[in-house]
Amino acid sequence: MSNSFDEKVTPIYQEIIKRNPGETEFHQAVREVLESLGPVLVKYPEFAHHKIIQRICEPERQIIFRVPWTDDKNNVHINRGFRVEFNSALGPYKGGLRFHPSVYLGIIKFLGFEQIFKNALTGLPIGGGKGGSDFDPKGKSDSEIMRFCQSFMTELYRHIGEHTDVPAGDIGVGGREIGYMFGQYKRITNRYEAGVITGKGLDWGGSLVRKEATGYGNVFFVKEMLKTINESIEGKTCIVSGSGNVSIYTIEKIHELGGKVVACSDSNGYIYDKAGIDLQVVKQLKEVERRRIKDYLEYRGDARYIEKGNIWEVPCQLAFPSATQNELNGKDATLLVKNGCIAIGEGANMPTTPDGVKVFQEAGILYAPGKAANAGGVATSTLEMMQNASRDSWSFEFTENKLSEIMTNIHNLCYEKAEEFGSPGNYVLGANVAGFIRVANAMLAMGVI
Ligand code: GLU
Image 1 (cartoon, protein in one colour):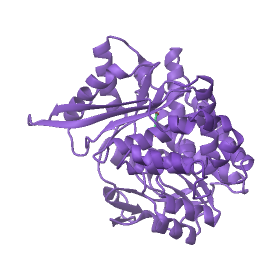
Image 2 (tube, helix red, strand yellow; image 1 turned 60 degrees about the horizontal axis):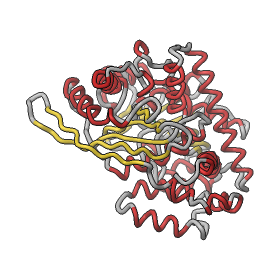
Image 3 (cartoon, helix red, strand yellow; image 1 turned 120 degrees about the vertical axis):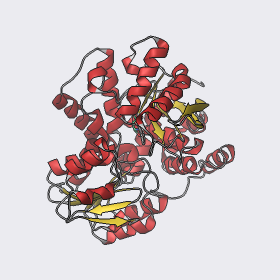
């Protein structure tokens, strides 16, 4: 990847910084895509002529709203809700909702922007969007979560629909929250519109494999990358940061394929289990009891917990950053490479800082950016929408095969585009270019809108 801009792209980027002050994560996400686009404009001058880059960087619609709710002691709280409907050239806006105190417009815009290209890479008919709130679900009771979700949906419902905008989960939003939000949508609209939201429960319109899809998909992608150097996951020592939905099902698939995950984490620290993480314990702690990862030691006496520790210091051959944005910096990347890491698969969105990406690329190790590697989640959301539209439900095996096929296709597309644009093995370039061209062609066809 060239870490500087093509001369045509520089003024476009400068204008975006000026128009969107203070939104640092959004700037970072835009910069990373724009750095890949120089050669695309040479090959397709019509994209420049029709100002496709400038239009793609401006969301079609941005919604910000008040979310008032009362806690169990009857105190009133006010949070801020967001939905950024970024691009609908390929289909209805599609992307998750994130509930986390760090959420502000810059985070939602970075996520929405990434989502455009990720969704395009899947080859499925979905546009890009993202939403969420600065609400902190940590420590809240079940009824507080329900009241918050109901208040959030009481405003959001007017903006979404199965042909308009289809939210799903992200950090802080899982099956429980999707249930409360879908219930409120159904009540307000008096419609059983299953395709309006994805990540639903299996008894009420959800799809098998959706829960597993982001993690499984990332492992499928890394498996394909390893094939290109005659390697496999079997027998490899792995680390997976985070311990949420993405991490759990990344660990599950790695173990199924014969790899060994020795460490995972939460925002307080990481656990190291030399014998391999006992996933049943992590599932019980995180999915059922909603506890912290340090409690793993109660079940596995031989494991270690490193409070405030840096998980990237654990030697491994494969690393799967699956917690959050910018969790892995240049120093961490250097450490990973030094310790013998040969491949990175990003389960989270933009988990590696630009410095870190540079280190991986200069070291020549396999590096799969999130927008390609973690596309399995949104792809399976789209499989859920297909099942909803046809009032069908597919078997686990059938759905998992579809997911695996989609991830292999994304891998091959990125690989081929990187070669075509003169940078073999550069999955960042391949993903950005392939995603961009697909959206740009659709925008071109639809005129200046
Ligand atoms: N939040 C997930 C992502 O980052 C999934 C989105 C979806 O299923 O719509 O892609």
